[in-house]
Image 1: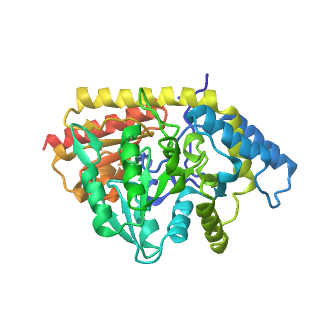
Image 2: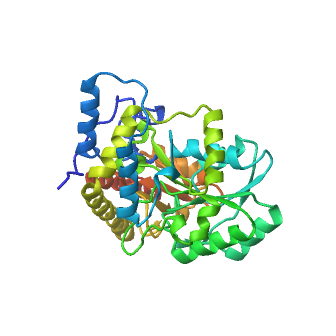
Image 3: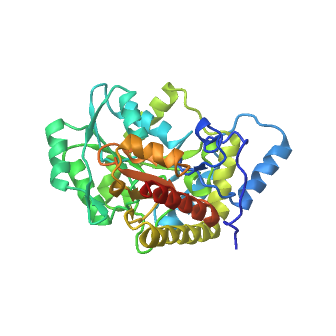
Amino acid sequence: MYNFDKIINRRNTNSEKYDREKAKDSRIIPMWVADMDFETLPEIKEVLEKRVKHGIFGYASPTESYYQAVIHWMKTRHNFDVNKDWIITTTGIVTALKLAVRAFTQENDKIMIMKPVYYPFDASIRVNHRVIVECPLIFNNNSYSCDFDLFERAIQENNIKMFILCNPHNPIGKVWTRDELYQIGMICKKYNVLVISDEIHMDFTYGQNKHIPFYNVDESFKDFSVICTAPSKTFNLAALQTSNIIIADEKLRHLFEIEKDASGVTDPNIFGLDACEAAYTYGAKWVDELIEYLQGNINYMNDFLQTRLPDLKLVESQGLYLVWVDMRALGMNKDELEDFMLNKAYLWLDEGYIFGTGGEGFERFNIACPRSVLKKALEQLEKAIQDRNSF
């Protein structure tokens, strides 16, 4: 049994999550960026310690055993058959998104995304002088769905060149079903739209919800799509900057590799390569226990809100360790809500409005923390709301 209840002090460790200015007040509990507060898999620590003791950190590239570890993980966890030749390493998925935008589209081309969605999608498009087209998701009965008529119409009317899919969908916690993915894929196929599928949260699904890699939906989808994966969320390795971009189509793969070279993006560093291989070789049991613990955190938070803060609604959480909470009943605008959460509840969250259309009035909580920390955070939120209501 692994100990996910262990408290580890992360302040003054050069942590993006804990050491930025907003978190300087010790009362603040940072629950914003997708970075877990759990110690990583012991075998990852061991392989990194071995590398440090060796003492030479020269240039490195993926080994045969590295590729086989990635292939084995995809097959055993997701029934996803990946060929070694399909795998291209990059220093992160956001890096890969920007490379894909440059490799497969031209300036002023239109790229579609479904909002609310992970905000670096916007940045990856804008910084490369492409045009964002939105297909807003429908929120009804505490869950999200796609209007496929709107989806197709937006592609047709705007001459969309690329669609960036988020599966599982950050921040709303939606795990796309096979039928939904099939409809997305067939519409994109009909209009020659390239699909970039960000599947970084693929290992986090709950209950009957199962992640389906985009290639597994229909064999033809391999001809016009790219799948982005990484061990960084699953094993808390973000700072080691290692991702595996899976491209089955030879022409698309060649274009991506040309852009990678032109942009000066090298392979991940030697520590990232070692950590990824160890994660995918030894990490199955650790991830199984992690998912069980996270499901417990989600259940705890849902019960807390239902019994003690019933005006707040936790949106159905099918995947991710990020939960999406509807706080519109508090009656605050986005600036008031952001100020309230940080300066009254002492919680640093990712505000819903930063995820775009449909996000205002929601908050994204990172619940990948010891349950005692989650309990304290929710109690702080409860007290802040009680104090506000007492005036």
